[in-house]
Length: 264
Image (tube, rainbow, N blue to C red; front, side, top):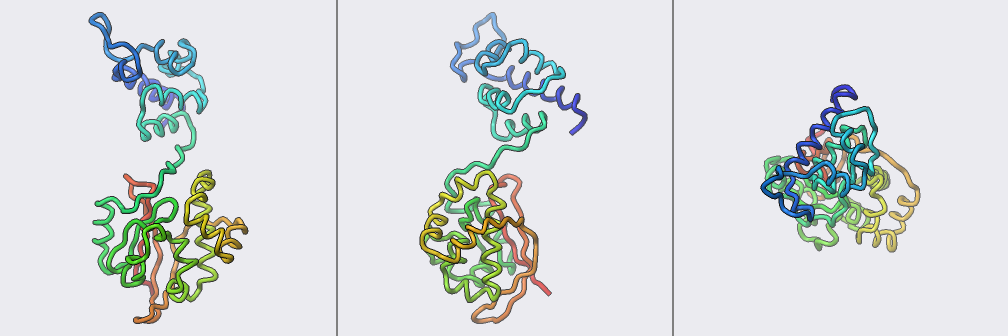
């Protein structure tokens, strides 16, 4: 993204442009009169964000100062930045991206994600939310796991199904290994959001009722996702071998699209 000096300049320019475009009434200030240009004044931004006017001026000028993350968060609120704009400001200042929102999982994948799943004809594929709720699937996945269409929506969670559905247990010859790996991957993905995601109904019910899940959870094992070979013992077609892949749509990074391609 360029040198530190270039990033400071870009940060200053970005804040200045966003400030100039913001309607004062949007932040509770009187409307701009005939003798005033549009946008907020630097002093108004500094007051609303509780930072020094001089310091904020230096920030817009790209001077050699290092704003804290808390200050940048306050400026993002004042300037009504979108999540993407907020993340961009943080990246320019060298901070880690924003954590994914922990809103309740959607019951259905976005329409364009479902179209992607359907386009993967012949390749079992499904979409999962951050708490591993299954939000969409295609016909090939339905053939592999028919229960996904009939289970109650509140139970359509991958971890819940892996640990409670006898069909899944029979489908996975390596259930002991795979089930524990799924728990380790869930923990790794949740990261700082683990406290929120662990509070989901499916996880809480598993902790309360399923000894195998409780043991895997209390092991605190962490393992990042990696594409790998999977074997399924389908009750009609017998052993089926797939390579397990996972993608995240750029406009919905909170979703994961899981795809099984034919294995050797």
